[in-house]
Length: 487
Image (tube, rainbow, N blue to C red; front, top):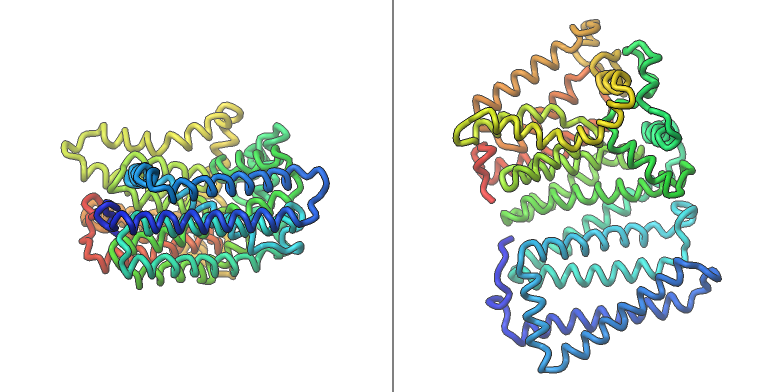
């Protein structure tokens, strides 16, 4: 989707009509929301109700004032010029779009989950009109931003309602799992306990010292990023597991939808609407994504950051490195991509000096290192043993799907030989051939999932997300050069 100067896209009267229509509809929606919420019997003294009413009243006044200004001819040029200058810049537009998009998604989640059975503990039903107003106001802003920024081509006009419809269906389906009653058997419950231990001043990594580095007792094997977040939510007052989980289900769903939106957006930039629709549907409704949505595993968060890192690798290297490091800080599944990043960096550097490798490694590792430093100081042995536990533990497989080493009865270091050989071969392919970014990532993650001694069903989503992106690389005839991809 190519952007254009809005002054060349529309006449002055067309720009003014678009602006006026947006303001009038926003004012009408704000006024309706204010009246509807004001007529509901709110809990006396409810601070949430007071601030919701205040916000609706404020927006009603703001849009009323804008309507008065927009219908005065002397002010129209100033309003159009100010709006055009802000939305014409890439940073300003991107910031506004992301704020509006996530407001729309979050308010849509709360609106569709207006059920006492699903969200009773933290979600008063009387706030439904407020969230419906947020859906309306942010949805209007989303349409306005797209029309204002991009040429109103058939592709753009079709893409917006299609992607919104897909995301709405994805949210509606994911909400079906919020009544799942046995999350205490899943990993998310033990992660909650680790956050609780951390909040109580107990090192969650120290439990591994009582084990034999082979049999798992739900040890803390991730980098500490999510443990910090888990304890932070409890510190904020949501200490009961059900209430704590209800907040994280919203966050996980937001990242789930963000992955779908990213998978839609990347092909859409190259006018591949069919592939965009396929990618979003393929991601949201395959059995593995639905499984992670049901069990509330944390994979959607680090997976989103990894995908965004891969997408930005050719456009903004430092941001890409930091995003990969952020993904590792939450859950280090993508750690086997680090050598691939370093190989790409080396081969794309003009002088191929060691400083590029060191600098890249530092940018990737800075966030995990900062997050891990308190635990390295606290008890370095416990931390190191916990992180390395996954490389020494006995094999485990969901649904009795065993790896090669288990099938042959190999134990210890010998059991890791097949996966190590496959990784070394993949790194050699990265060095030898110019494979695409997403294709190479798919290969690396597939090796991890299909050859690693330990297999969990949540791992599959890391492979699923990269399949349509690999198809995108093939269809776009990118040619497999990870540092010369077209923008």
